[in-house]
Image (cartoon, rainbow, N blue to C red; front, side):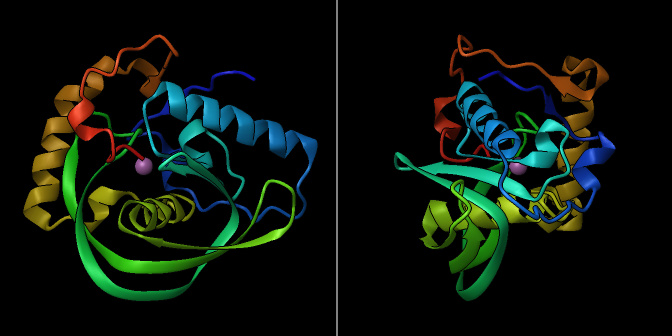
Amino acid sequence: MSLLEIRVLGDPVLRQETTPVPQVTPELQRLIDDMFETMHAAKGVGLAAPQVGRTERVAVVEVDGAQHVLINPEIVEREGTLKWEEGCLSIPEIYGDVTRSARVVVRATGRDGQPVEIEGTELLGVCMQHEIDHLHGKLFIDHLSFLKRQKALAQWEKEKVNYPGLVRVVSPDDPDDDPEHDDERM
Ligand code: NI
């Protein structure tokens, strides 16, 4: 396995539509494994392919110790609303409250190529919605009100100087310097 570079806000790949995966290949499984490793090093709970510069329609999620692989995911049921503070591994240090569906059912293909259906509420539900957004070029800041988005973007202008080339390099040795946000980086 190897760690991948994380692309940060400003890289056009984050705004691209992904391409459905026709078939689960060993190469795709390697990408999935690398994405989990990268997500762990970055102290996140979810990561989507565009965040590592890829265009395959695949994301990984890990909530409460349960790993989920979402290949070609689709939300087939949604119910209610909730507000959750979200952050994104591609927009480090920026957080904001997003209104999402309170419960979703996601249909996808798993790492073994078999169909899966995953029901999620709270963090799992929020994280799957956040990752599926990524697969369609959408970011959590797009859900903020105009004023809150302007504020987040102004904050990001200062933060982004830490990521030359719009690339974020993570290491498994990176300390978790912000444990308060452990359930929000995705
Ligand atoms: Ni994200």
